[in-house]
Image (tube, rainbow over all chains, first blue to last red; front, top):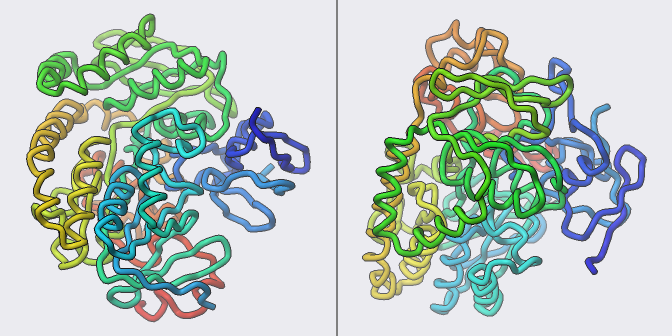
Length: 82
Length: 424
């Protein structure tokens, strides 16, 4: 059995297996988008590998973090545009 | 604020297959080497997460070699500048560090090429490799309806992977025509291992419709993708889906090489027989030196690693294999060349630059990348043109390569030391 970690996505608790990225945790929480573009369009991840910056979220208070590049840590606070 | 400044005989940038092979070969030759990667763990894209899952025996054996070779592994570390020769700047978590090297091997891999079409900015329209990466990092796709489209052998690998994870792959649309794919399959006959892989793929993909000469025209949906319009010959139809996984083969990540001043040719870093770039002591292996896939990356990585460690005879042993694999790489490029119809897909309102929301209609008013950038901010957002650059090269024929530090956005406080600013 894989170990799990518990994170908060926009305040709601999500439990994921160890090795899950913050981006996957966001999408597993039923959210369809991660950020809003400069014109306000909803956007989700595109490249999945840290190049496109579409998955930017605020992680543990750090804004513009690429959520696809960061593994979920215990009690991590993940915030997306709403 | 510079924490953790360190010195090495050799630094390898990028911990995918090429980088791992390079670092192992060099360190086993007795030199003090470090490998740096921006991901949380080594493996690059193709071996992402393999250090945990150990699905690939080949990856597992290379990981073991990497650990026992004594290479310093610096993960979650993004190289963003070189302010003086032989010293690169990198950001990790909340630290800035200066990493000094005598020799450098650039193994920065490739990214997918994305081409704009109406609806491509909808959530759940994602790269083919991008969706695979997401599933490898925890996303469940069981029962999800997925259309895979674009171009390149990656589409098949992704289809097999997603199917294995319970996804309902509806169709794979390959833009290249059958006539070219058939010639490519013929060339596979000369590639023993590749043939085996393609047979395995065929078995895994049985039941999925693979259409050549088929491409996405439009993605539709309200707040997220709900369906995609595909075209094949005279036929156009709508396919309902939860995800569209769409990528048009690969483009090399050459930003670091460009920053360091390595010469490039046709978009790739120019290297000699020992994988050394136009700058003595700076080597390049894997995709930035020419898109060729896993096996070629491993071979080039070993050549670069041995050469950088002064073991030229050992490096030379791989020359023959590299020649054979490069023939395969050349066939790949010819086979998956993009069809012209793809340049007619974006409408005036279609976003091309996703960072700054610049539409196709606005870009069309300009005659060069430089003019478009100045007037519209196209390519000036955080991705620095990595996504829209290859797209506008295809759409308008603009030459977009232009690099300035930092090559990745860095938190402003990190730059308090003056990186970049002093050059402006």
